[in-house]
Amino acid sequence: MSATKIPQVLLKSSSNQCKMPVIALGTAADSNSSSGETTKAAVIESIKLGYRHFDTASYYGSEEALGEAIAEALQLGLIESRDELFITSKLWVTDNFPHLVLPALQKSLQTLKLEYLDLYLVHWPISVKPGNWELPYAEELITTFDLKGVWTAMEKCQRLGLTKSIGVSNFTCKKLENLLSFATIPPSVNQVEMNPTWQQKKLREYCQAKGIIITAFSPLGAKGASWGTNEVMDSQVLKEIAEAHGVTLAQVCLRWLNEQGVTIAVKSYNKERLKQNLEIFDWSLTRDDHEKINQIKQIRINNGPVVFIADIWDE
Image 1 (tube, rainbow, N blue to C red):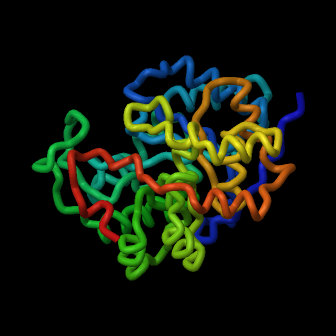
Image 2: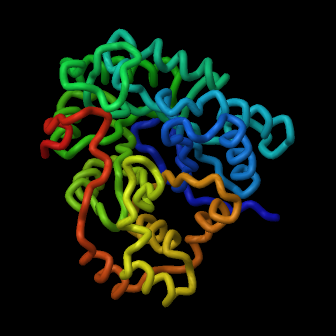
């Protein structure tokens, strides 16, 4: 079985001209339903198939399993060195304070048993009082988010070589504009929910103009997750396009994202689907397909880790 060669994009603000594979395997578990062993097995299988980019976060609880899978892949000779992989992790909202950024990253590296990350992201543009609170967080736990202080600490992490690049997640155009007004290292990536039912046109145009790469999470609408939707996978429009091309509906979604110039974090631990998710580079959607997808009704599904806070989504 030959491994698929996945295209890469250059992260402009990274140290040493870091390149990121356009498809990542996401390791977010819904309410810890996936065990560490399941995650580890899926990562090893995906490395065999050609995946080289793995997306985790301190909040996901999958850093340890991912680290073990990387160690095993090296041991088995599936990769020759850790440098062949691109590892993304994220700073959780309860660590979203200037003095906690570096310790949080060091803790993630320790859990992953790695010396550096390729990309470290601010997970959400809010700060929650430190502690092990139940999700969704109550409004009284939300506290002032010092974006400038946090970003200065993120830049320090990159300068120290603990991460090759830094970025954000779930940031709107307005929040990115604020960040770019003082950043000395601009964010390389903004990871956001994006799929045919939440197309993020304005944000895409803004990020493209600023040289920020978008990574789409929930590219298939997170069907089956507690906060997910069936809107994407049940779409009649997407079903018809898939039939016309002789591909799966999921492949249509991933190909559409690829043709928008964004990168993708896709979550599947099923061997056949892992393989299918990489089979999107040797065919194209038609102009007619794109026009039909553009007409799909838009609905955002992930409202974040808090009960309600309009400020996250203020444009």
